[in-house]
Amino acid sequence: MRSDDGPFAKMEGGDVTGSIAPGSISSMAQPASYDPTEADLALARNAASDVLTRGSKDSSQPWENPATGARGSVTPLANAYVAEGKTCRDFLASYVNGTTESWMQGAACKGERGRWDVRTLVPWKRS
Image (cartoon, rainbow, N blue to C red):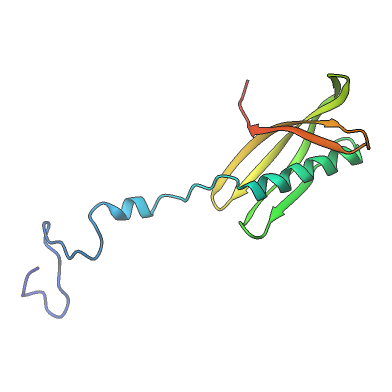
């Protein structure tokens, strides 16, 4: 620092105060990455089961987890199909938390009581 700066000190190129580690500002500016928690996934699975049980065409079911701030919606894809003797259906689920947005794909099959049981729910991979 220079002594002739008046009441405000100006930093020279190599001056370090130690209050903020060099290079730490760029890492602080990065958006936080949020992965779905088990509670988030449970709410998404429940929304999938609900929207598939209703059976209405072209519908989506929103879900939200106030504890984590995560939210999204589940939308059935295509028509039902038979797998291992059960009626099944694929769906796409959105996941939003903070600045993180992603998609998950899943499959559910109709159980004995008419309720849809989610068999898979994984990050969406484009084919």
